Length: 404
Image (cartoon, rainbow, N blue to C red; front, side):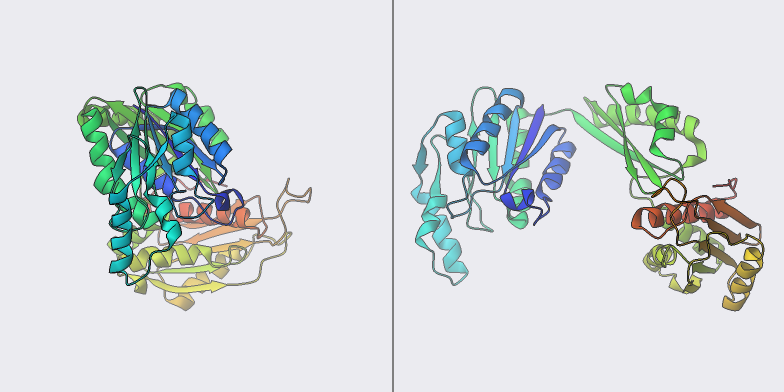
């Protein structure tokens, strides 16, 4: 079963709004065992939307649209679907009554243009919308099914859960089970990860894909099988091989975070922490603070301080004693300090290398680790913050500390 999601709305193409509906629909379909192969955004243009729908009908068994079901002239989804499947729009008195009843419950007067929303393609199956004014509908043809949902997220989510997913299960019966697991790696670039696991990325089922973030690369494993148990077994086999190759580069799975692991370890040990930062502008402390707060252990972050960046040619000597003094001043068991220059690092803007030193003082470690980049742009800050958190994770878990 292959699906396609089409979002309508010129506001998305103009950068005025962000499409969250597609992500929600895709997650719902994945959990139902439906593989989404295309996500498309189209402006409020009848001809373009009709053309996109006709193309979708040639390649996808299930097409879900969101948006364009309102009462205004630029809400063109109804007419575009009718044209794409070669049907007329038909007025439904029962749908108009639903719309009028919604306005009456809200104590508002229905406008004449709301009648437009009571038209759906001939032969379509209406989906009543008790939480909004836009009726949804389903159009079935021999090769494909089009399901049209409103663009208001609250309405779309309600209808997805209460109408669309039950319809999909009734129409197609037991679908393949799909399982996805995401492994998080850090402090190693996407290209390095790819060089280590490239052959696994060529697998068909399970599939393995990469997603790069600042200082972190996610590895997504997706398996499709007849049963949840079989899908889980397939994912587990690939995960085992990934862990064999990557070792402690992998720090967590799915919803786990570096700061969450650090907070859990600090709480388990009853150890307190002090954080001093320069070019990361407090990002390290903020991430740890939030994670400790989730555990009700905010008290374990004894102190956090932001200081000006150091000069690019500043020596490493003396940084360890500064970190020790900071920990003693804060009364903390552990200190992590990020001493970085404000200048960009080597290869950025063609300048000379900037520098960052990550300094750790724990009962077990007294370490100064050099990092070859400096700077305060968001990308660099993201990388350095992740590196600093990974160093602290490694120290707490007794893993090797590597020069950055």
